[in-house]
Amino acid sequence: MGPLTSLIGSALARTPAMVVDGDGTAVTGRQLLASAKVLAHGLTAARIGRGDPVLCRIANQPSDLVALLAVWLAGGVAVPVSATAARASVIGIGGATGARLGLEAGRVQELSPAPAPARRGLEQAALIVFTSGSTGKPKGVVLGQQQLAGKLDVLNRLIKLRGDDTVVVALRLSFIFGIWVSLLAILSGARLVVCEKFSADGLAARLAAGASVAAVLPTMLRSMVLAPAPPAPRLRSILSGGETLLARLGNETAQAFPAAGIYDLYGLTETGSCDFCLSPAEFAIGLGSIGHPTEQVDYRIVDQQHRSVAAGAAGELMIKTPFGMLGYLDEPQLTADSYHEGFFATGDAARMRRDGRVELVGRLKDIIVRGGNKIAPAEIDALLATHPEVRAALCGGVPDPRLGEAMHAVVALTPGSELTGQALRSWAAARIEAYKVPDVIHIRDQLPTGGTGKLDRTAVARLALAGRQAEAG
Image (cartoon, rainbow, N blue to C red; front, side, top):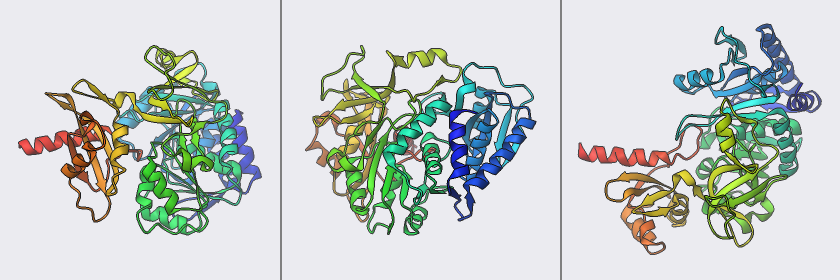
């Protein structure tokens, strides 16, 4: 039995942990463990091999945690796949893993008569989490039992969940953020409430009913802080991650929930998640940054030649951690190319602030080259969001025959605002260099998001191009 399996199994048998679904039906930790053992027996009967990948269809129900644990108890590797994922995505992941077995709704399914290919190292693995693939072919990130167990130990000391907590997870359990928060709640003996899907009203109802910890994306927070903020009589911690928490939204969240400490968490699936944290103790003074590295995490900010850049200069953020991935599935060269001297290349541009905290500038792949000038769109997002009538903004590059790339922004306004895109451009022009002013600003009710609920910067270009076609037609 792997270290993660042992850790979670012991906690379920020992603590009064309880998992609650969207309808309020509760399952005790012991019941969850018993169900997992039965399902593991079914996998064994289906001749699961040590380290075999098993596709787990995730519907954000307590049964998802049963499925993950069942795979681990049977010696397999769980491959979480959203129950709402497109058929083509499921087929693609099934083909990439060679999974012979799957789990859905508590039943073992035979997906293929052929055995899964033998792979070195998967005997020590817990999860294969596939990236979203919004900009290319999805990659299978292999996470180890020992590494994930070690990271949970670190997070337990950082976040300090308690047995009397009610932890609401408004995140998908097919991705690492939702998985580790759920496992941490189980380890703490807390009451875990799993949201089948996110809605502002649904989360508000759970806060009013006594949730003490909420795990959310900033996009979700944005819908919660509009006046009046929902009552949250027991809320003591907000765990925010998955995308950048801009300063304005952070301030609005702190004002809406003054009794709650906010943890702004940054990390990648490849690095085991939560590599940096802006803690509640430093939130007010560190807002806009990702804070400091978590335990046993080291980092560098480097140029294209992997030389450390000066404080205040932007470069690529590189991370070294003992809790990182075992590698990309069947991609040894890609895995090797992702590291330099043991540091993983995150693809994020960052800089060291004067206060010693790290600040994200944007994704390197998102950099817009407008007329030869390089622009980090996250910088412009943050500026536009400081306008008193702007709730949020998202910029992206759009192909342009004259400039190479033009910069468009999608902006959501505060209720009742009649601000126009041209007026906002004029406001921005008084505050930044001319080449950084968005060429076009699209006013929308909300920002575009992808399948995981995160903001989708690539959708800005699609929206702009669709608008051009509509005008031409």
